[in-house]
Image (cartoon, rainbow, N blue to C red):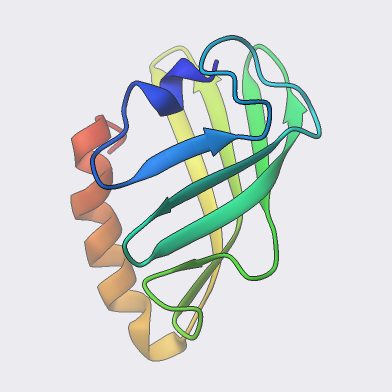
Length: 113
């Protein structure tokens, strides 16, 4: 559901969908973008089911800097104990510890960790 992204937006970051819709189910092939300071991740919804959602990011997407972190895919898995996610990224090797630390902090705001 789009509301999972729209309702959890934290200013000045924003999630937008190509369709302009702010509620309802995702459709495979639908385009979207998450953007804000130091973030531009635009992609295409992949497989969608009751227990799984896939988002493939396009070349040019980045977090912090294109030279440091380039997200490529985000997967959501609905399980009995909640929602688990996997974020695939290309990261400069020396930046990996900082990226992990930042993610451990960031995702706590959404009760993901």
